[in-house]
Length: 303
Image: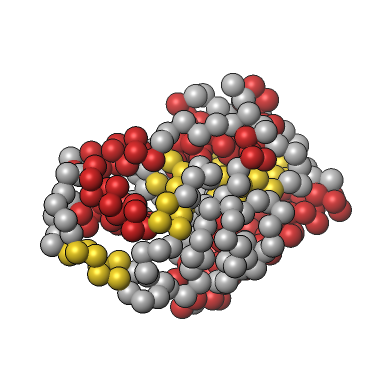
C-alpha cells in the first residue's frame, strides 16, 4: 500500500504534536523514508530527527528536493489561545506555514497541508462538503483558511503538488486533549455531577487517529493537487449523547450534567463532514466510535 509514497523522501513537521507523532509512528513502523521535524527535543526517539525553528526563512531548504513531500502538521491548535493572543497564533500558524511553503516552492517539493473543518460556515447544518460556504469564526480558523488560499495560488502559479486536508474532531490513545479525552478523564473518578462547557447540543464528527493517519496517506498517494479533502468519520453525535455512550461503556450510574449556557468563543457548534470525496480515493474508516472509545477508556483507566 502507498507504493509511490514509500519511494519519496518525507518530511513531517510538528513531529512532537498529536497528529505529527501519529503519522511519524506509522511511517516508522512501515519503513517509510522520513525525517521528523520539530522545534523541541526528540521526545519520541525518532531515528531521523531534525530540531529547527520553522519560522526562520529557508531553514528547510537543505532537506528538500523534487522527490520530497512535506506533511505539514506543525501548528498551535488551541482555538481559545488564538482568541486570547491572536498575534502568537499568527506567528505559530500562518507565518510558520508560509516559511515551509516557500521552502517547498524553492525546492520543487510537494506538500500536504493539515487544515481544519472549522473553516466552514457554522450556519451550515447539513454535513459540510468541500464546496460548502466558508466562514471562519476564530483567528485560528482564519489563519488556516488563509494558508489554504496560499496553497491554491502556489499550485496555479508555481505548478506545485499541494493537497489540503480539513480535519474535524480526532481522538484515540495518545490524544491527551480535546473533548473525548477530557470527558473520560473526568468520568474515571465517578463524579456525582459532570460540568461541561456549552449546551451539550453541539454536534461533532469524531475520527479515530489511526483512521486519520491512513486518510492522510490516501490523500498524499491518490489525491489531486490543489484539491481539498474532508477528514472525518461522516457520522454525527451530540455531546450529550456522547457522554451517555461513554457513561454506559464505563458502567457508571446516573450522573448529573451541569451545562454552561454557551460554548466558548470561536466554537463551531455543528461539525459534521461529508466524506464522499475522500472515499472516492478508496479510503474507508475502520475504527467504530464504540471500539475507539472502549480502547481509550481502557488506556485511561489502566494509566
